[in-house]
Length: 218
Image (cartoon, rainbow, N blue to C red; front, side):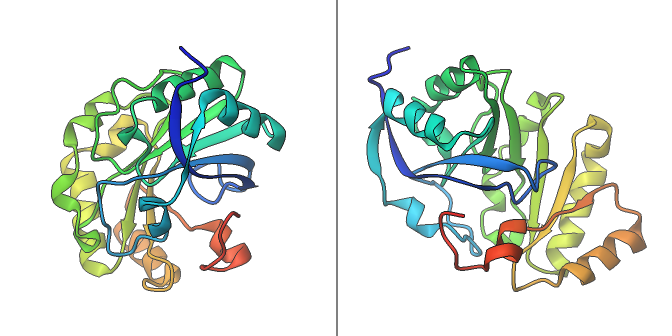
């Protein structure tokens, strides 16, 4: 593994983890540039194109300066850049607790087993449901999590059907149903979950509740 390997990085910053079972924890974010999906509700479109090339040494140094033990590698879609695997292994070797946020359209099976993978399942409202890589479900392990972002009632019914048909609750993996911010009322979604006894968690984007939907670098 060469420290001179490069990745195109959109931003590296420290914030409060806003999603998953790790929500509320201080976290260093390494956001990579590039994504093969174009979700209708995407809130990080600048990460499709904008960024600068950094070596693994430079990235590791930037993360170290932030001084927090929890790190999330995200995007865009971080698995589009092959050198991300070397970066994740390097950060694990350095003792960080590492999370990977991935859109669920690419193979997760080769990710370092020390990394906790947060894997999206795209609902129809995203416009990208046909690009889900269902084989990823067989690669899930303890510590991984699933996230389904819902735009409306139709997405909810589709997502609940997936959970039941795929028996996702039997995987022992947390399943988050998260409303699109500003489009689906979280209280309404909570009501549906309670009414159906859905074996899922209500997710919210804590960082948007704290700093607003348009804030960046937080």
